[in-house]
Image (cartoon, rainbow, N blue to C red):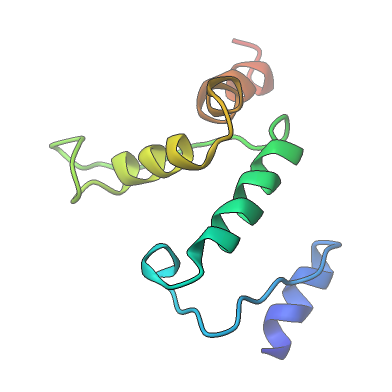
Length: 98
């Protein structure tokens, strides 16, 4: 647990621990608390998050494709379409002057 807190400090923030939850947070009781926390994070940092993937899944969709799952998760957690578009597309365009 100390390494989690040390990593957070290295990034200039504090770790937020959700007691009793494992890695499958979205399947746990109390997940609404986590969803709201992540939604707030995305809203606060919407201009600084850039999505990128090196996913080489040949199907490119469905539950076996990590890129598809990540995009679906961002869409589910973003408070609105504007935040979703910034994270998935517009911020990268700005970063790379496209």
